[in-house]
Length: 244
View: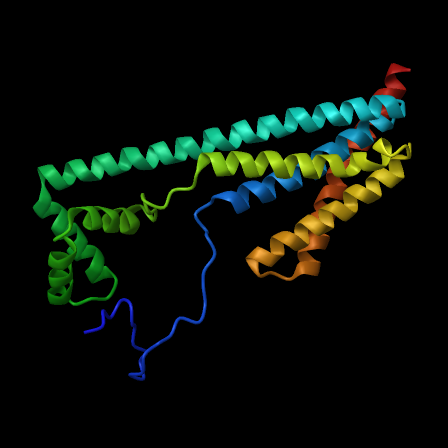
């Protein structure tokens, strides 16, 4: 007999064939990559604008490369630490839940019955479902964690993937506004155009994964980046005037 989990049946009684897939939304590479790319583009374009307001092209290149390296390593370390800390907190909660399973299993069963009842099951159905779920302690523990905390302890994001994604995408984003300078075009405006185009591409690329409107996402990132870059340029200009 076919397992109903493997061969689900639609409300009409006909077998349902899976016709769609879901992306990984556990907070792994996509969030870190998007954050890294946007931060690299905005921070380094803003840095270049601020330095170029009162310094030579040579100084702009040195500052831009330094900002790229410092930002990429900082982002990677921050992502690794934050994801690792979040995973350790989940592990800690798993230990708390496992201890409750061992010390007071009946209370855990009653808790799950209450959860299922609140979801719309009748008390009798909830009790029967709880009995079946608790036959496998590992699966029961996982089910409790998902229902109580909204996290799956066996689907945690990798801190290495988050760190690597953040490092690579920050470096790519940060080097884009530097390209004209590295090619010999000592023009801030050309660098700003490169940075703006990069922001729009990054916004549209992120929208591909989130299924949002690509044009709107691109323009939104350009707007946010422009505000940050303009503010930094203004500060750099004022500092340059004050120093001279």
